[in-house]
Amino acid sequence: MGLGRTWTVSLLGLVGHLVEVEAHKSSGLPAFALVGLPDTAVNEARERVRAAVTSSSVAWPNDRMTVNLSPASLPKTGTGLDLALAVAVLVAAGLPAQERAARTVHLGELGLDGRLHPVRGILPAVSAAVGAGRTEVVVPAENAAEARLVPGAQVRPVEHLADLIVDYGGEARRPDGAAPEPPPSPPPPEPGVCPDLKDVRGQDEARFALEVAAAGGHHLFLLGAPGTGKSMLAARLPGLLPDLPEPDAVEVSAVHSVAGTLDAAAGLLRRPPFEDPHHTATAAAVVGGGTGFPRPGAVSRAHRGVLLLDEAPEFQPRVLQTLRQPLEHGELVLQRASGSARYPARFQLVLAANPCPCGKAIGKGRACRCTPLERRRYLGRLSGPLLDRIDIQVDVPPVTRASLALAEDAESSAAVAERVAAARERQHHRLAGTGWRTNAEVPGSWLRSDDGGLPTDVRVSLERALDRGALSMRGVDRVLRVAWTLADLAGQERPTVTDVGTALALRTRGSTDA
Image (cartoon, rainbow, N blue to C red):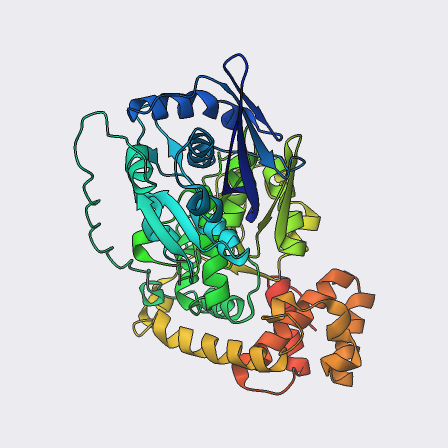
C-alpha cells in the first residue's frame, strides 16, 4: 500500500478553497476511483491524468487507486486540479517526493501528451494558497506571470509533466525526448490610449454631468437623438476616474483572471475597466452564468469601472431587471445546482438611449414619424425602478453651429480628472473609517442623520420636493448624494440649497425646480 498527498485550490466565484488531494494505492483489481464531490470536468481528469502519465514514459500503477478530494463536502470544479491528481497518484506509486508534494500546491490542466495547459483563475487561486500559508506553487508556464503577481508566492513554472517528475526525483521523459525550453518572453504591452474629453464639442450640460458622475461614482442616463455624442461621452468617463488603489487592482484583476481576460504581462489592472456589451447580449453574457459553474459577466468585469449600455431600450427586459441587485448591493450572487458564486459588481452604470425608435423625437418632434404609443413603449422598456436607481439623468440635445463656435477650447480629460481627484480626496477624508469610499456608496439613513451634517434649509428643500411627488424616498437619497458631490467639487464643507437644486435638475433632466 502507498499514500500520496498534495494540495490544490478549487474556486467558488472569487473565493479559493484549499483542497487536499489524497491518493491511496491498494491491492485488488486495477481501478481509479475519484471521490469528494467532483464535477464532470474533474471526473474526466482520470483519463487525462492516465494518458499524461503514460505519455511521460512512466508506467501507470496496476493497482486499485482511490483519490479523495478533501474537504469532501466542497464541490470541486474545473480542470485546474489535473496536475495535483497526477502528483498524488505518482507519489502513492513510489515517486520519492512525499515531503515536497505534501507542502506544494499544484495547479494546471494536463493534455493527453503530458503538457500543462493554462487555466483560468490562477491569480485568486494562488492568493488563496498563499493566504492559507502554502507559498510553494507549481503552475503551467503560461500562467507563471499571473501567479507572480501575488506577493509572497514561490512560483515554479512547468511546461510538461515529465519535467516535474524528474524534478521530484523520478525518471521520465517527454514524448519527443526534447529538453525543456524556457517560454519566450512576451513583448511589452502597448499602453492603451483613453479617448480624450476635448474631442467632444459643445454639450456643456452633458460634460458637467459626466464630471459630477466621475467625482461621486454616480450612475448616469443620457437621452438624446442619434449623433449627439452620448456614446462619445460615456467612453470618456473612465479617463476621468483615478487609478485603482492596490486592493481594488488585485480584486479587479482576480475577476478578469477568472473570466480569462487578464493580460498578466501587463501586471495588475490599475485603470478602471470599461465594458460596453452589445444590446443583443444575453443575460448570462451581461450578468454572468453559463452552463456548469457560473462565470463572471460584463457587470463583474466592470467592477470599479464603467458599464455602458448603449441603446439601452434595445436590451432584453430580463437583462435590464437583473441589474437591480448589483446596483443596490455592489455584488452578484449567481445560484446554480452545483453551488453559488459571488462576484463583486460595484460599477458606474451609464445608460444611453434615443427618445424614440427613429430617434427624432427631439424639440417639437416634427421630424419624428413614431406614434405616441410607440414612443411610450420604447422608453417604457426602461422600468421606473431601474431609472429610480440612476442618480443623474440628462438630455443631450443636438449640437448647433453656435455652440460649436463657442467650444473651440474644450477642456481635456486631464484637466477634468484633476478636479475629480480633488473631490474624491475630500470624500476619502470625510468618509474615513466608515467603509464607504464615494458619495454614491453612502446610505441615505446616514445622509439624513445628524452624522451626515445636513443643513436645515437643505433638509426643508428636499422635504418639499418629496411632498410634491417630484421625488421618491430613494430619489431624495440620490439627490443628496449628488449634492454632496457638487459641494466636494466646489470645495465646500457641506451642500447648499443651490447644490440641491442643481442635483434635482440633474436627476429630473432639468424639468423640476427645487
